[in-house]
Image (cartoon, rainbow, N blue to C red; front, top):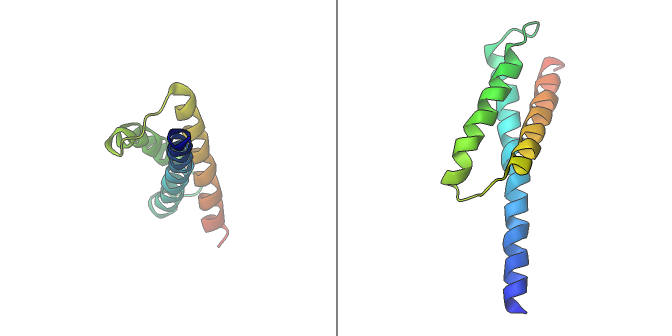
Length: 92
């Protein structure tokens, strides 16, 4: 019983990390896109893509195993967070 609770707790923490880190990377990409690119150019999305690739190498460093399905989910969360942050900064 205790092992099951510990395993569920570990899975919960891993799930939170898989949501929180891409959201943070997306906001950072949005801020960098706002500061480094022109709003009319499409270079802001390039910064988001670069940070998605960087995440692929950061996750093993923090001992977080990701599958291909998880990577697609992480990519979506990052791009979505980038879009929200970049849009809010452009409208400020």
